[in-house]
Image (cartoon, rainbow, N blue to C red; front, top):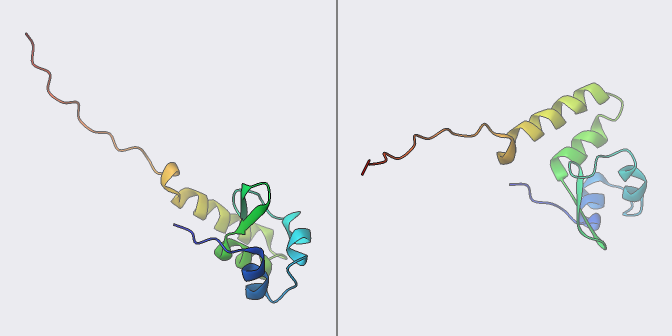
Length: 90
């Protein structure tokens, strides 16, 4: 499970002003790099944002990291096929 960070926490981690994140969001993917729990709040995925920040000049590498992240999400895991319970005939 990802622990998302607030704008101030993320800005501090990157060493930038909190308002700079607004500009950066134009290059990020909503739902991957950040989420909006409601209309007034934005939370950042620290692992993906710091990787994006460090590798802005290498988008192919960052895309690989995004793909790996998306594949690792529980909703993207293969469904386990169970056996059907035995049905007794009447």
